[in-house]
Amino acid sequence: MLTVLLLTVSNTFMTVAWYGHLRYRSAPLYKVILVSWGIAFFEYCFQVPANRIGWFGGRLALASVGALLIALAAGLGAAIGAAGAGATVSFPALIGAGLNCLPASALFLGAAALLVAVAPRQGIGLAYGLVILAFVWYLVGALLRVPGWLLGVSPFDQIGFVPAVSFRAAPAAVMVALGFAAGGVALVRFRTRDLLGA
Image (cartoon, helix red, strand yellow):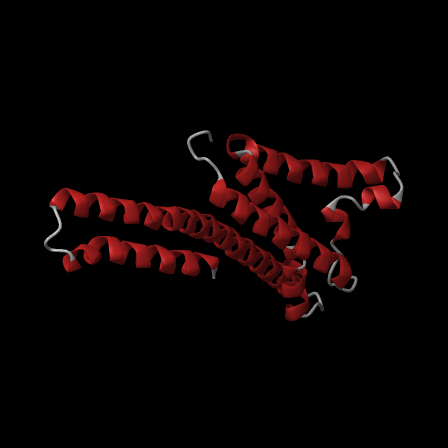
């Protein structure tokens, strides 16, 4: 919505800059050009942030759809494998098992977006490092028998083994909320980021 509002204001300034001079045909050409360029400056002040938000938001949406498709493919693969093995697990339960990973994906995607918005050159590497660290902590922490609350820091510990156990809605809601909050902050931060210093 913010992108649409920014582009609407930008287009208003652009229209005035491009066509407003037609009302002042008797004014000297150099004055008309300077005034038009002065008005067009404000068009760019609204258009550039709108394009950055749209570009970055589009990449976030694309990554979210990709995560959804991967989760559905994993559930479908599990369902096909279960049917081939003669298991008595229902198709919807296995699709739900695949979708069970989406809250953690939303959290990691939001964190990655925030890291890229804040530290563009290091953001991708840091995001992969975060996922690896969380997964290794989940595996090694269990082997080291660390306290449950400390093991629970890893988002992987918050994912239930669906369909063997029921879906854990509270941790899923927290991960999704944190992921969306981080993504929102990333959009705001990316809008104002200096791309030359990136």
